[in-house]
Image (cartoon, rainbow, N blue to C red; front, side, top):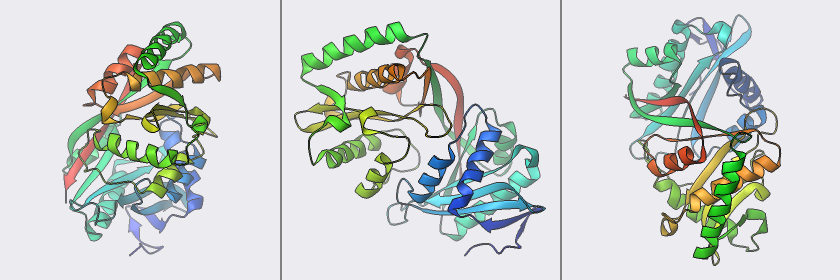
Length: 326
């Protein structure tokens, strides 16, 4: 079921979004948070290739003939998510953003989630977004966990990063662990090896919404996204096995270079592999003329938080996950 073209939400009319609306949604996020610009090409790509092969409903909100907002509800397929968590998105352009409209959009996607069989919902908000946080609190949401965001000054930290990288290279050699880029791995099974390792690593990432498997073809689509390149994806190998990865995303249009994913196999944890990989991504970014990189991690992921701090990353405003029982 989708809303009719005349369905009213507050003083907004909703219509089902198409792929061509992805650029508008990226522009809304960028206007709201200009220091965290979103790339339209990446937004469209992820609409086409949802990360967990999940189900999504997306809507555009119109006011007086002008697109001013959006709302979305998504979840993994219920056979993979028996606890039936759904993810909600809703926001408006700055000149149309009001408490009444934002509340109405959140209420709408709550109803859509409930109608689709969701039992619980999750919505993220920036810690400085007092309007949205207040709306969620009034609607019965509670804070569940936080995502920490960081920025690394590659210009100011170049010398200590270079010294740390030299040290990690020595440590990897002493342990017989190869550090290289994915394009240099001559192995027809490398993508499946990387997928299996990433699945293992993602299972161990702190979370509230239960982990669900990522199909191999979905993982391959992720690796092909416009912000990633195999010659910038750093992997660790022991023999033929891929035991770690760290890769920076370089937005093709607009945005800041960010860590897309860092993960290691359980068999090498405590051996400094994640640090070695992150150092290589940073040094490569410096060589490419990048002046800063950003990353984010769950606030309970102590090992990676420690690595970030030791590399010189500085904290940025956090994201808060709010949850609600329907």
